Length: 155
Image 1 (tube, rainbow, N blue to C red):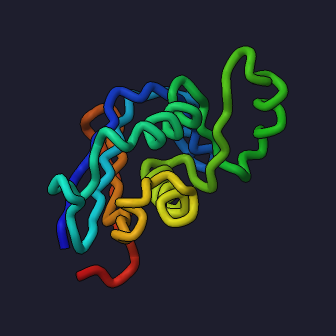
Image 2: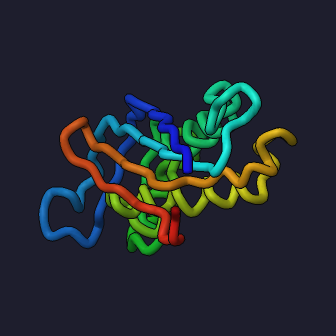
């Protein structure tokens, strides 16, 4: 198995953990970093596990969902009110099952894994190499983090 890591830093967005008994139940923001560890059994003809230059689609996907957005839980009781207030004019909302670092890491893993497998985001040379995500780390303000690791049995 060969791995490589791609890091996306300084992603400013807000989130809210509505079930939290303290201050995390309020909308608040951080600068986040997402760290993707990719793996494959083989390298491409250049010698890369993943050619980072071919990940522009991933940066675009991340920016559309996280850059200057408000990340809210799908079951947030105020979600509809927030949608009315935001409406893409005051702020954009990204709905996730869980807006914690742990939940965002799983959301990234689930969605990006689907894109890698079925989204035609890899070129012909890479698509046959079965590139997968080994783990994703979500770092909040450089001091707190959570990691979601691929539950598949990996070599």
